[in-house]
Image 1 (tube, rainbow, N blue to C red):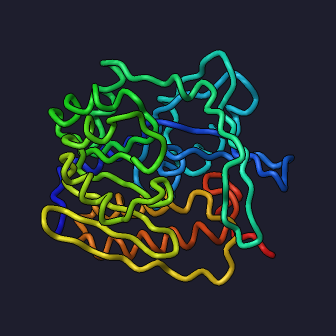
Image 2: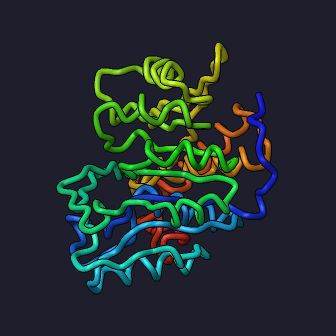
Image 3: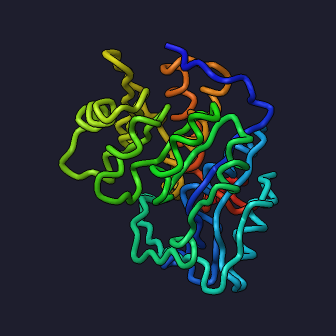
Length: 284
C-alpha cells in the first residue's frame, strides 16, 4: 500500500510542538537539544528534506542550545517564538545497556505553545505537518486538511484525555508506542487509532519491532539489531522521521517500516539525537 501524497513536497515539512534540553544524570555538565517535534525536524533535515520547526523557547541561555542544534542540522527556525521564562529541561538516566528513563520533565514555555490563524496558514504552506505535544492540534487540524496538508501526530507521547478521538479523523498517520501504553498490545493500539479515524497507524515496540495498520491490512516490521546501544533516547523520533520521509517519496508501508527501523537503530548508536555532535558515533 502506498499512501498517496500531494506532490507539493518542495514546500517541505512543518514539525510543530515540543522541544527541551536533555540533561543526563551521569553527565550533568552536558546539555543536548531534544524534544519529540524538534528531533523529528532535525532528522528530516538531515535526510535532505526542507523542514521548518514551529515551537517556543525561553529567554534563557538554554534556548541557544535548541536553536543552534536545529540550525546546524539545516532546520528553518524562523517560526520559533521566544517567550519570557525557561526553556524546557528533561533529566534523563541511562542504564548500562543505554536504555533511557526520565527522571523529570519540565517543558518550560514550550508547554504554552499554541497556534493561531496566521501561524496555521504558514504551516499550510508545507505539504506535510507533523505534531507532537501540541494541545490545540484538534482545533486546527480541519483547517490544515482543508488546505491539503498531510498530517501526522506522535500520540506515543503525553496527550490529553480524548486526544486520539479528537484528532484521529484528521490524521494521515498516527504514531504510537507500546512503551507509552503499559498493558496495551501493539495490535490494540493500531485498532484503536484506526477506529478513531486515522488513515494509517504505526506502533513502535522497541527491540520487538513495529506494527502498522490501514483499513483491514496489517504490517509487521522487524527491529534492527544494535551491537552496542549508547542511548535509546530519540530512537522513536528517528523512526518517525524516516517513516515520514519514505511516505513523502510515495513508499510502501513495509519498506517504510524497514527504513525507519534502520534509522532508529542508528540513533541508538549515538548520544543525543538533535545535538550537532550526535552525528558521530560515541566511542565506548
